[in-house]
Length: 493
Image 1 (tube, one colour):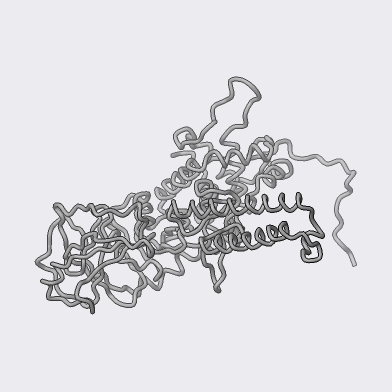
Image 2: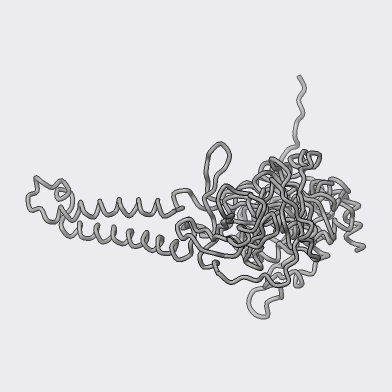
């Protein structure tokens, strides 16, 4: 049977006369090259981009950015692997003009420019917005957990710290008792260690205890519930099937037209609760629209968040058990139109430090529960005069979780205009949610191999995932428009 044979390795071969001949006209690297060449890196906030006046010459900042964007589009995120690609990958050679920076230089560029990388992501979104790749009608918001560079063993809460201190105390007591015993037969420890060695062991255990006590004091001072020792910003949070891991909760707003990522936010919140309005508002601002619809799952069901959306031109559609009625701050006062509703919710207005009940009455800051870390808002006089009995108790109160340092009895209810609105469930929109927002997370975690962080610290993770989401949007834009058309548009704008 005949087989296909390769060429003799010793055979002389005439390669194309230029490296450009290896890169086809529709190769995606031409889009990367054209787009990054069109950027003003100084305006975007990149640092250390001016040529060195003394010392060794520096690598061009645009070349460093091209290396990263190409790498993230091709599942290559490690600086060491990127260094290897600049040596052996023909596309990378073309892109970098055969420059081969070492992995430390590559890594330092990402580390020094997290905010600038986020600006590049926004810049590209403005570009594709002009090309009509954003529908600007419906956004789907969701969050997903990404593993941090921090193990569960190196994450502590007060309970875990107390347990570690208790164990150390037991060990210290055991060694202290062994020093007081003169009979070697009664002390197994003395057979292994001398008195001097035992003192050294006790000293080491006391140092460990001091570290745990410092952690406990820091948690008390910051009012945080947990602390991570490798990546201080990472938090332990639940994942699927009852598992937990230390990582970040990354929020995204995805446009419904082509599943393009309009905006993202890296957080260390252990739940999605309270992130709908902030994420949607940032996306709305970037898309430059007056109003937009947004949808999210039940984890975002917060009356305060829904009210914040309504007050900022966002129509929220959150998975809820029923329609809800709330009172929000408005431009014109419509209190006379307020009616009794059985599905009413209380809304907290952060800027004013007050809460508004479903009947439009203001609940004022009353007390703070240190144990539960909750602020309580109520208005007994208003409840006594109210015809609506919306709770089993005599007075309605509202509890808001917050840190004690953020708690204050000061408030502002001046010139407050209120209106009542009913947020209805729209199943036609809610059914679209999964198909819009869950697809990008799956692609990023599997096809882009970006289900975990390589960098430490919230700011650095923002820079890292700016590259990830830029690569995702860039790849989708190429698939939709084609490389040639995208290059033509970039060079003409």
